[in-house]
Image (tube, rainbow over all chains, first blue to last red; front, side, top):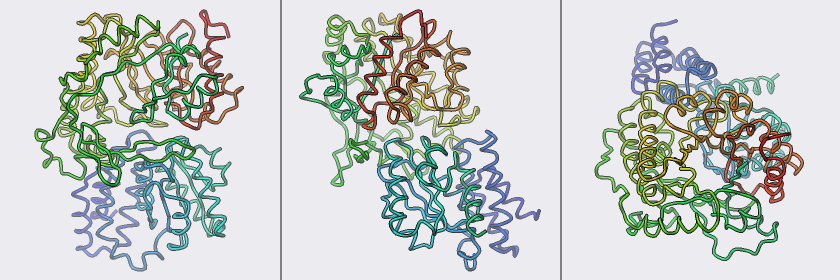
Length: 215
Length: 367
């Protein structure tokens, strides 16, 4: 691998929040393209971070720091990505459902997806079904990703899917769900297209869902 | 076998009605929406434990509420009430006093910390505890100081605090140690007044796990968290022993998949572990009982993610029997719902849980 890309890769994995943008800038100054830095630097680094998390070597703090490092590098190249939507893996509308303010899991998924080349529209927390629906149309979303941490807010996932159906948009998006009390069975029972137990597998699931959609 | 229950206001009102008990006039919910069950309900269900807590300080240093409904506590943490679908509310943290600051800019000395010596906290506490002890025959669980890690991330913002642990461990430790000093003093103030009457001392909650794994690496645990937390636990043990509470068992609450921490918790003096979150990885009952059952008592264990809220009464009964059968033999189980009971738990399910324990939770366990 190119030396610049190797340095960026290492900086993200080590969680070097301040150093990563410097290394990204150095790569740009040396003539590497923004898209190359994204696809050969940032994306593989985040896939490695995801693998380290799945293997039980990285925990939530380490993932957060690595993801923030990636984000600090991504900020520099985002404005330079030509036809950003065209070159991205897809657009994801993500949020924590109505009545629920928990956001770390959702934030990690958003960062992993962004580091995986997706465009992210993060609606935040306590997101009513109508706001998900509006965002799908407004941003031509490919995927809707919902998070809930509480048994008492999980029902809002079903309500959101029903609202998407009522708006005639269900065929246009893939819907994925996650959060501590959420299971594959629950996802099936509410008509979601997928469930992921952690941020790393959420990113893999998203790639599968858009791949299936375009097939 | 002993039983316990923590419950929020709406299901408590429904439960009283379900049991044919008269409605309670002056219900006061704490900031988790929890209410203290009245003795008549505890006796009707066969629940054995009652909480003993500190009173409010005479001087309230909490900043005044904001116009948008944010209310502050004495640590400067701000919360807003969020409606829970299906009824009730949760007070969620929305303002962290040290959020968004570079660690080098945080001046811990100038923050207005609560005064653990405020006499209001212990006014009348010894007398009221003695009365409850003598008049009700219930076992008492003392709970005085609050959390350390949770408060630290309430004050710093959870995401930032988690990153501090790895990026700025000295700062993370400094903040937690400042909190620990106050929690130790609060524990001691309450223990001094009540120790002889307590059966259990609850060390408050330090969540070490999430649904499927530990929240922290071994390195973070050993180098940053364990020294601070165990300092508080050992101080509580020393205070209990000093004030006539040598018989009192130390209980720790820790959510999630925490199996990997249990040997360390035992080593640091924990005798009762709560809540035994059954659906988490590594928290299967048979393994816990086999590997740790002779060292600690399990408090909790009745599933609140699936069975209690969404199961039929028969499913609740089956799960309660399973819990008793796998964690109960030989002693060492205080059965309780894993989480405080939320409005999505039907009163019938709670009644069936308690009834099943009364019928089948007698020693020796034969199920």
